[in-house]
Image (cartoon, rainbow, N blue to C red):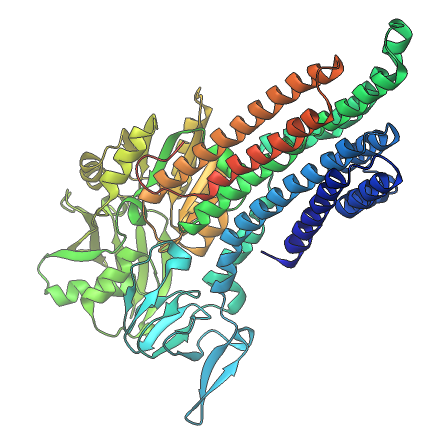
Length: 620
């Protein structure tokens, strides 16, 4: 419990102690009144101060104004006990609220520990701590056991296990060795690691995560915007209504005294405080973001929780999303040349490409290529590449590219096929295969069970490859041989169709960025995903686990369900007690229950969004 909460708790306990003293002294005179006023001042001075302060800032009609007006009015009417109890119970409600907000903030701010405060560099055989901001790309840092990795990089020396739970939500240690990529925010558990830095501090994974989380609440949902507007108009209306309730009935009904109607008006003001709505709705969304963050799912705004709850169509990229994205050369077929010659020409053509297919070809060749020999690089988007090597033209690409070159090649229907041509001579082809992720089918089945109406796969791969993947997964339809702009066309076409729900796109690559932006909600695979995809996405799954898509949809539905429960419950109770107060059937203490009691119950209900159940069924 922080210092402010402790002080408020002491104020509540002391004021309650003074009320008990009044009950024991049985004195209705000056002493009792004096003790009541002391108790009221101790427990309510901050509410009175805020009400006065807001008079000069244009924020007059808020809960502080309502509470101050109602309780001061009760004091003037001689209802001292009721006045103090109203303020006391209001502060108890505020205490619950502060605790709930603090708990939800803790769940998110626990991520703030992921960023390293220093980096170790080796100088003259000794380790020296420096500011991570001073480290440049290409520098070598040393991470000892128990230390956080401060910047993203590649292991150059060492072997260890990393705790990545703050990044991915998974507690199982992750083994790394030489040439493995490591992310900032991970904790080195065992061996000493020497890491070559690949990203500057502000661009590192930990910094990006903190930036996402810190700004997540800046985008309000439609529900939150409604509550904000509702409060702006609601409060002046109830103040005017209370004024009319105090003045009109005595004029119309002679049997009603002005004092009785004034008491009803003050009771009406206490009941009308919209605390339950104003507090519990944003708290519910904030808790949903915190619960998702603890599972390694980052949302860039609470509005995306609302959109996710309405998703009925999910479109998947194939490579790196449904499949592992780790390509391997599984077959080499030559045409009157040696295998090594074919691989060399293919590797030369793919020399400057970082695409997984290109990397797999270069790894298969496993020899150094003289970069000075490779010139005039011309990439044909979605088809292939043309380079000039020592005055010879080398072409590498798919079947369609060969057709464009008027080359007669066999049409091969297995894996991803890269045909290689030197000059006008066909050298052969290389087959590259990718594996479907182990949990892909289970994850998609889970989505089907959550009433996702349609699941679509878009891929730049051939019809044959796409069909094989689609047959192994519960995909409703697929589109193959697509260029990046083709994916955007398909997404826009699907979004124009009459749909009752929203459309989500799941991808990981550089060419997925435009589609991630265009979809109702873009979900990026953050482990293997490119920076462009992560930047463009609305939701980032840190460990590439497809099952997290089902989890975040469950979290969104649970959050929206709880928020709607709070809205319906709060409004229903408010209306009921406002009617009772208007006709004189509810006193001040019953009004307190209507205000503070409903707020506390709504806040406690909102705190349920912090509880994450990653099983198939979530608690309601």
